Length: 434
Ligand code: DLL
Image (cartoon, rainbow, N blue to C red; front, side):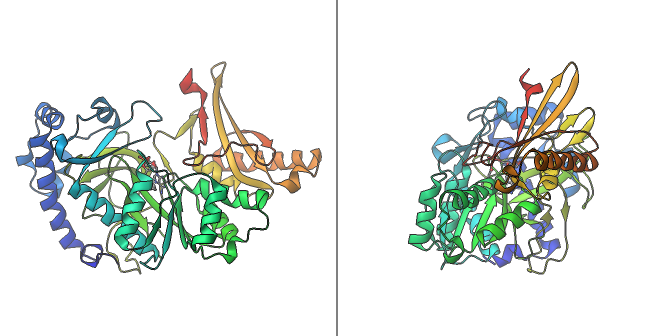
């Protein structure tokens, strides 16, 4: 463990620490940020009323929309001269959010990433190739600072340029690559199609640290077997710090949340009511130590559940289940709730399909239509129409039994779905564009 004192802290002691830090954090936001003060005054809430963890339910939520309305610096709680770095969320839906870090915040950011790396089994002996994008995205610099903090040799290559990634893996003796799961798959495809003589399994690469987008257990199997490595999940969001909010350990069964820095609650996304441990809902974050950009009850829209399972790794930190989607990714098709991850899980179980797909939703004459375009492998592609028709029938049938709705399937040729170097675009909802 990188920091045993906090990662293996007895649960009751952790609760005490959280209470003390929550009192500080809520007051810090209220006293140093106009938006928090005005919102709390209007709601009739004052930090003096916050005495026990049970008082959390009295604290107003902060939504993504409110955050966006404060673009760019409206939620900072220190003078701008104390901010040493900013990042920004991708802003694919609406205004981007600019997040600011003080020197201490950067220190915490590096520390939580170093903890994650150690939890996957990385050490200072590792050579870590950071293939997340550098720049405003939190992935590149976040992993970079964390890797240096651990003392590992850090290769700041950034995203994209697969051939160069592969060359450096071989030449520099890279042992760990950090990227998105979809890019890890692109690397596997690239080797098969463009560099068939490149033997990834004879390089030193032993691990991939993957995150920034949802990925299923099947996708993990696929990546692990094709690249001959172990793949671990890394989760986080820019608003809360970036990557490093939670990570898997060697047990690969849920992600430990760094509760000494981030207080987590699960709520019913419709009513806002706090749900008991173990129930699935929207995860809400409160920062406990952040100075520059505090989050008090920030509604992330990510859907998961929290639990303690006496993890064999020795960490006492609460676990969150792998995030399989967001409440705003959830598609409602003719009244049925569908998560893209459910579709992915079905597709990856069918022989002949490649793990590259796109879900297209539209409304035609007041009727929702859903189409899934998915790539087939070379073998099926060259097997002729009959084989393709049969495969289409199988996919339609399996999706119907998993989702309860009929989905139009379009099989496309190998490499027929556009690849991304960062987060994959899996869903195109034309209803939102209309
Ligand atoms: O994606 C931070 C990050 C960088 C995480 C590198 C991991 C690795 P944002 O761009 O703000 O930040 O996007 C955050 O991405 O609310 C989730 O919906 C999703 N997400 C991030 N990690 C995971 C994951 C970064 N491991 C949003 N599994 C979050 C599922 C994830 N979803």
